[in-house]
Amino acid sequence: MLLGIDVKRGVASTLERVFNRTGNRFEKLEILWSGKTAGIIFKRSPFGVSAKVLFPNIDETKRIPHDVFNNLIGYALHELGHAWFTNNAPWDNAREKHGQFVNNLINGLEDPRIEKLVIESGRAPNSRALFENLLNSVLKRDGYVQPDDKKNIPFLLAVEGRRLNGYNLCVPSIVNDSPYRDDIRWALKRAHVAKSTDAIVKIAIELFNRLREHGKDEGQGDGQQDGQQQDGQGDKQDGQQDGQSDGKQDGRDGQPSNEQGGQPSDGQDGEPSDGQGKQSADGNQDGEQSGEQSDEQSEDGKNGSGKADESFNGGRDVEPSGFIQDSLGSYSNTVDIARPRPCVGKPQYETFEWR
Image (cartoon, rainbow, N blue to C red):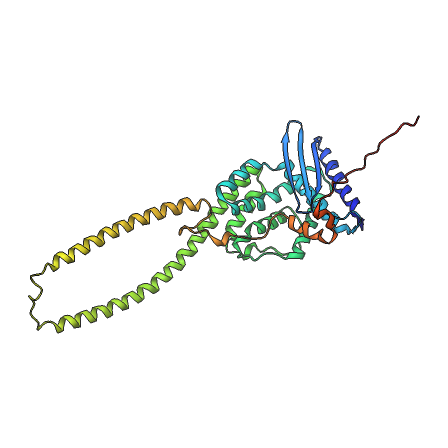
């Protein structure tokens, strides 16, 4: 067990020590125990990296288990990996253009990539064990996702991508059980050898397009079945109408045929026919416009009907930020929630000269 104040000092000193081993330095490093969430905000410049690492608040007087402390270090190293290896520009552009689900796909593919680079760099010798322990802690608490759950494909990618990194995970792979297994395998294979965030973004966008086409194929299959049923019903109705009309016409054979002969029945019949023809033409035009709108809307993750594809909505958070926040919940201080205290960090010693 560690005191909360020692946890804060340990996280701060680990971040600075590991980063300095690369020959780089933080232009500015802030560790904020803000009481809200966990994450990192960083900016690169010719003078170094300015980083602000956020953690949930903890009571400095409470005792915190070592496994919680190890998960904090693992999470801190993960966020440091983003500061080292992630390029935010193409990621941000893709999110703005294609929406939240593509953002999640990028996250699910980028996280294993940057952790792999942290491990291979040797900057943090124990990083693989820490990353592996953090992911297993999340899976043990929350479980895995269902293989056919489209909205949780980003989380699946994050787990299976780390399995390719060599992590020993507490859950079996579910890729082979997924209806999207071919596309998922393709994305994982490409992402495992990707050299940059830009490459990850392109893989994520292509995967999104493939998943969307997969959904359209499923919808067309359902539509064909519905159409066959409707055609069958339509044939029955046509047969009944034909039989009824034939019966009525046969019964009218004895009536004078010129009762309405002087009325412009043909013209009346023609006019509605022409009118319906115009409406039909307009209907075709409307259909073309609908198709164009569908194509534009599909860029933002919407289907052919113009409505948002709900199968992409929601899903578990790829980042373990929520897990970190929850794991520290019982060690929080209500005073920090109302008004966060400054980070303790490493102690600084002042010298005095007595005269």
